[in-house]
Image: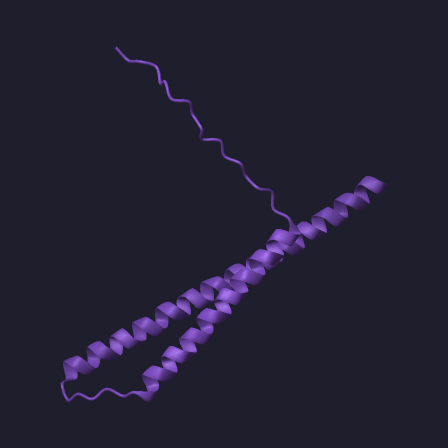
Length: 109
């Protein structure tokens, strides 16, 4: 009734080992992206502030204010996440470096 699976399984997962250099490179990339998002957030907020709303309808003013706040908030959230990831990767790189140095010192004794 049930036939055996004739296709070979190719789900071999290779996990790369973390190293201080990889963590440093990842932290630099993430920090750069966080800074780019921060610069974008400042540009968007400045653009919104320099162009006031031209409407007398209170509903239009409330909706557009909410949309502007959401746009700036989402970009700020992205900036914060990339910055926190950069700090975490930098801390992981320091931790791995300290572990490698203490491992070498303990193996010498």
